Image (cartoon, rainbow, N blue to C red; front, top):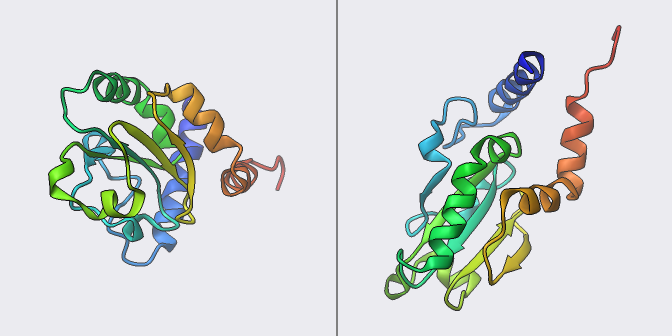
Length: 154
């Protein structure tokens, strides 16, 4: 397990070293930064660096929102390996840039690829296992998995 973690960290360091003036450093970002308020976020800041998961609700007390955040919090390690950042927006009156672009109705979970394209929209909470499977099927993630494999003797 330590070897896998070392390889993942080494890959993340290499990626962050090549990224130009990234606002988000995947190695140094504390776990609290994985889930953050998305009302002031611009999806362009994550382009080619992170996979945003945006969780919308009309209120932070919405039971679906609470359940979704619990699912995501329980699986932070799996999400971090997949370069995920979670953005939340529970204020429909603010009409944030995320709400304007993604147009949610009540609760909604949106998975956006590193290329900035919407890959998944769900009206109900999804657990991290289901989200991880969806991410792992993406072509960019498949390439990341191939690139991170260690070639013996090479």
